Image (cartoon, rainbow, N blue to C red; front, side):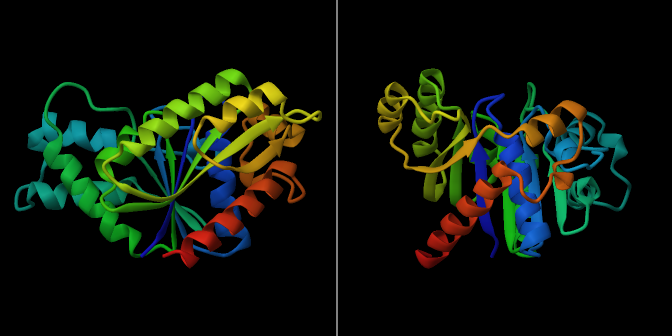
Length: 258
């Protein structure tokens, strides 16, 4: 069974960057096959990994529920949806990417969601690791992950506002209908002078241990500004160094406690 890493945080804090570098580290450096799931409606994980995304699970929902004539004769709806989900997966060297797409609109999607949950459960058996890039609300995670998340990382910036946002996300995580085995807080874009004492005080109220502090990284900022894949980021990147440390330590602890 795959070790599942879920990463969340409000927009603009570097959450997807951390997710992309996690995929890079596991796939390129540790040589582990990874299923990357972009569960953020903004869907930028593919771009950060240098992958062109042609279709999403949201497209399947629309096609199945609104264009029922598109289902070939002789094929059940279950078979059609699973076939289309498989087509959505972009296969890359060392990892595959599944993009969820925008949240559902009006109407009942229970049937499609149930099939998708079942599909992801089976697919996870083929990968040592699943890395899920979530939106702050984590709707995709709560609706479509049946079972447990081994490691949940909340990414935020070292500011008072960032601490308050992290607390809201941590409180929401405790209410999810899934089991989260380990949780941690990652501080991104930490200034050279470190985290202010006022912020440290607020972080103590989040209820999560700080498992990583990432300094400002000009190379990451340059890649983002130029739209370059983070797979091309120099190996000596300071952010990548923290990702290595956090993932190695927390995955080791998670597996030891399994």
